[in-house]
Image 1 (cartoon, helix red, strand yellow):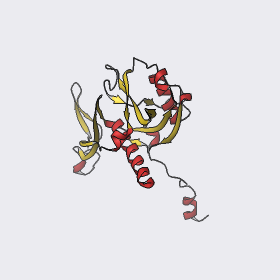
Image 2 (cartoon, helix red, strand yellow):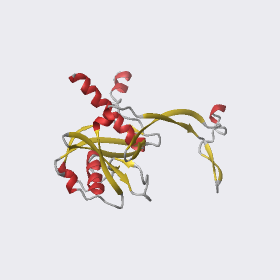
Image 3 (cartoon, rainbow, N blue to C red):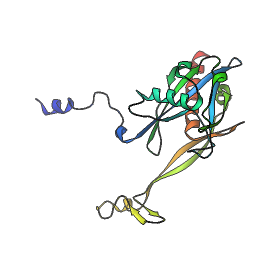
Image 4 (tube, rainbow, N blue to C red):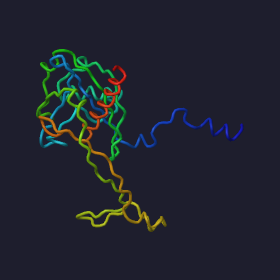
Length: 224
C-alpha cells in the first residue's frame, strides 16, 4: 500500500477535541418557562456553605459514567435532584456550544422548556438550593453584559505554604528555553456580568446566558 494512503486511512474521519478524555465534563440545563405570556429563564441561588455557595446558576453538575447515558441526561438528572423538576416536565429544545473553561472543565448547556404548572410543583433540595427565581429573557436581549477580564498564567513551579517550592515542570533541567523557566502566558479571558434584582449573575452562567442571547438575537434579525 502507498505510504501516504496508509497514513491517510489512519487519521480520524471526524476530528474531535484533543485531550477530551483528560478533561472533566459537566452539564447544565437552562430552563425556559412562560410567565405571564413571556419567556423567562429559571435560575437558582446556591446554598451558602457548599461549592460556589451564594452564587446564581442554572441547575447542573458533573457527568457520572454508569449513571448518565449522555450529557443531556446529566443536565436533566441534576435539575431533578436540585430543583425537583422531573425530566418528563422538560422538553429539550436545543443545545448551546460547549464551553471549555480555563480549569479544564467542559460545560454543555441544554435549553429546556418547562411545561405549564412546573414552577408550582417544584420542591427544591434545600441542601443545594437556597432560593429560585425567574427573569425575562427580554431583559438580557436588550442589555449587553458588563465585560471584565482575568489573566491566566502557566506556572512551571509554585510556592506552597508548607512544602515550599513545588516544581511541576523542571524546565531548566530539561534544557527548555529560558522563557519557560518562569511563569509564562499572561492570556486574558473575558468575564461576563449582569446585575439583576436578585444579585450578580456572572461567570460560567453569565457566559451561557450571553451565548443564548446571541443566538436569540440572530434569530430575531432573520425574522424582522
